[in-house]
Length: 134
View 1 (cartoon, one colour):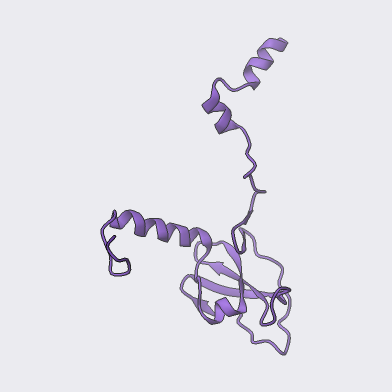
View 2 (view 1 turned 90 degrees about the vertical axis):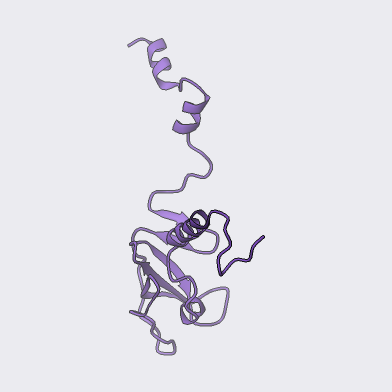
C-alpha cells in the first residue's frame, strides 16, 4: 500500500465522519464516570471495616440502591463518611451518610436521568400532579 493510500484510509471522508470517529475532551476512562457530585463505576470500590463510633449501613436498601460498604471518612464534612451503593442496574456510586439516612437519590445517576427523561417524554408537555401548568 502506498503512502497516499494509507493517508486516504486514515483520514475521515467528511466533517461528520471526523466528528464521529474523533475523540473529544469529554472522553472518560472506560468504567469510570465523574458526574457533578459523585463518582460512578462499573466495579465496586474497595471498602474498609466500619469504625465502632459509626452506624453500620451495610445491607440497607432504599428505592433501587443497596449499601454495600464503607469507603472512609468524608474529608469535607464532619459526620458519617462516604458509603458505596449498588444500584439495581449494576452500577456503583458513592453516597454520604446523610444521603442514605434521608434516603435521597436511591438510584444511580444513569437511572435517575432515565427516569427524568421518561417523565418528560411521557407527559409531552401536559401538566402532571407534580408539575403545575405553564
